[in-house]
Image 1 (cartoon, rainbow, N blue to C red):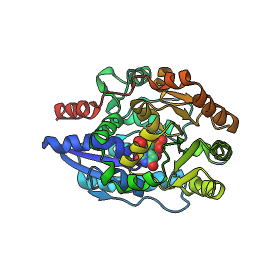
Image 2: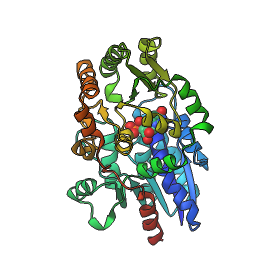
Image 3: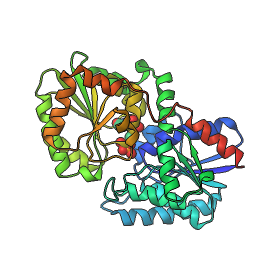
Image 4: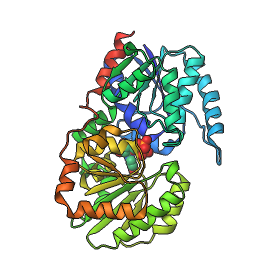
Length: 370
Ligand code: UDP
């Protein structure tokens, strides 16, 4: 079976890596990995630790381009790839423009589409933007839907997807996390060596990530003020691996670049980021993947969003939606620092996103549909 994986960004690389590796191990698949170049550096760094090298590399990014231009570039270039490769199926992951374009280009060429991480919803098309609607549109296109949780399956059923086309698998990010923890070798990872020089075990580490479009501008200005205030406490250390997007990194570097107690660093490879999560006291983030990973590491996540398509984590109590207002961020962090019970209440839970076997379930399904 000839399987084409279309991948554009870091989370897609992290979450598809376990499926790609599982397919490669079984030997009965011809695996073709196409990187669209949407977030090239982050994707390459995520793949590096698993020795996955894209077979096809597109270059869809142009400076200053909007979402329409990005999508049309993706469609045009992916159409060429699909017509040349002529795969038996196309696998896409998540909710990015690359995911939507991969699904649509395959559909137009009458190639079956398999959607990994299907059925997550906020039902608010403004948040996450444009990802919520991307994911919904892919659900209209896909032939098979790999839903991480039962809740995701119910959303798809409610939208009229046939039950036979949905498989509940768990989220492959847990597979990636477990693979990474198993092989974690801090002494031979230069990024971790470098982190060890700034990480202060005597302090409480607040690990921050933030890159969502909805938070650009006002949201990040509030976060900047909150981090400045928190880092003024001697018992706190803030480490913030910045995203490559200049609209996020530039205001952060400008405002917090020389602030005592705050370390703005380059985005980390997955292994180093997992190591840093494991050292953190808590995580402040607007990332989707981090909300899924942190419960496995027993770390609370304060989510810089008003709503999330990862409701299972909110219900389990492992993440808390706090928005981006400075006062809320400062207050929630302080509360977890002094209230041990509240802290333990967010950390002593089992992870609702899976058991590390999602890729195996997905590849079993692919193998059975040959
Ligand atoms: N991550 C990483 N290095 C970093 C920051 C995050 O490898 O410096 C990982 C993180 O563990 C998670 C994924 O990247 O698996 C999240 O990616 P991102 O926040 O870009 O996207 P989202 O999850 O919001 O779609």
